Length: 316
Image (cartoon, rainbow, N blue to C red; front, side):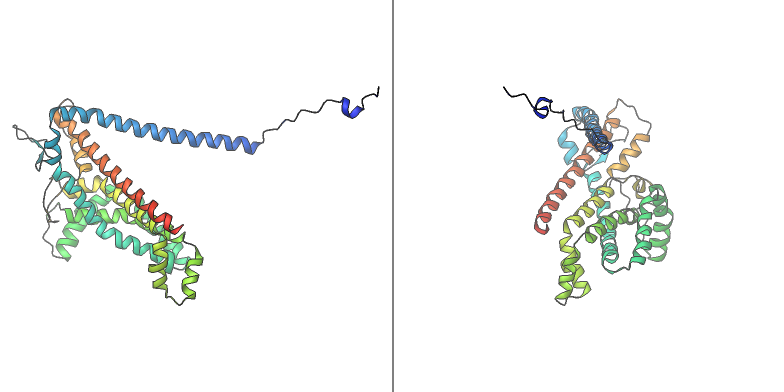
C-alpha cells in the first residue's frame, strides 16, 4: 500500500475573498441612492394622499360638474355669492404660461444654439454662467421687477401699452425671463451632447454653419430640447410669487393680456394667507386646486416622456 504524498494529504486551503475598501464604499453609495429613491417616492405618495383626502371632502360639498365646467370662480365671496367653477383659473394659468413661453422659447433656444454652435470657448465660459445666474434670483425680486418696472416703465412708458398696475402681460413677460435659463441650459446640454462626427460629416458635404445647426444638430438633439421646453413649461405653470405680486387676484376668462389674471398656484398662496376657517369649503378649495394643478403637471410630463422616447429611438 503506497503512502500518501504530502501534497495530497494536506487539506486544500479555504478560499476567502477579502472585501476591499472600494467595494464597501460602492455598497454604501448604493444604499444611499436607494434610500434617496425611497424617500422621494414616499414623499410624493404622502403629498398625493394629503391632497386627495381634502379634495374628496371638497367634492362632498361641491359638485364635480360645477367645479370642472363652471365659468365663475369666486370661492371667497360672501353673502351666498360663492361660485366654484375652476375653468377661469385653469385658463389664466395656461394663458400666463403661454405668454411666458412666447418670450422664453425663442430666446432660450437661440441662446442654446449660440452657446453650443457659435460661441468660442472663452465666450461660452463667460456667457453660460451669466445666463444661469437668472435661475438663482429670488422670484420675489422678479415679481417686484414686473410690478415696478416692466408694467409702468417698459409697457406703459416706452411701448405705450395701456396696462394697469396688475396685468397678465407684465407678469407673463417676467415669467418668461424666469424660465429662460432653464430652457437655455437644458437645451444647450442636449445640443452639446450631439456627436462631433455629425457636424464634421455635414461640413464635409458643404453645409454652412447655420444649416448644420438647424438641420443636423437640432433634430439630433430634439428629445433633449423637448425635455427642456416641458421643464420650462412645468416651471411656469407652478410659479407663484410673480403672478401673486404682478398678475392680480382676479380669475378672468379674457383674451386681453392687459387685464389682471390669477394662476392656480397664486390662488393657493393667496387663500392660504386669508383669514378663513380650516373647516370651511373655502379652505378645502386649496386642496382641490392643488390636485388640479398636480394632474395638469403630471399629464404634461407624461406627454413629454412619450415625445422624448419617440425621438430618442430615431436618433440613437
